[in-house]
Length: 103
Image 1 (tube, rainbow, N blue to C red):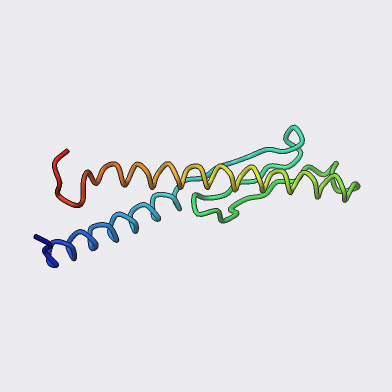
Image 2 (spheres, rainbow, N blue to C red):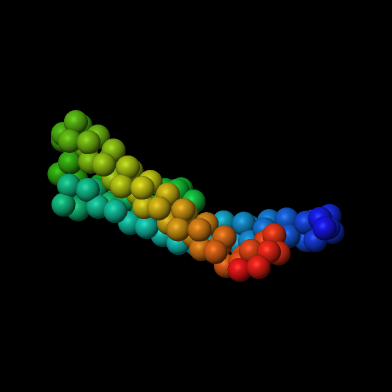
């Protein structure tokens, strides 16, 4: 039989897990380098840029700098998305069967 009280508890637990996951992701930092280290970009697990280091030698070539920045941003975004996906799947896996059926 479907129990609304149990469903409410399950949803509450899922929200707590989601909040915990978001906090854990924000505490992680990912650093990528582009152009052999000419550009170094660090982002947190929520995809927010936390640091950017640009080698002075790139400042005279705008096109090269743009390419290096785009590459670093794309690499960092992919790392964040992959980690978010992995963390979410782990969270769901740790919940077991939320619908109470047999395993």
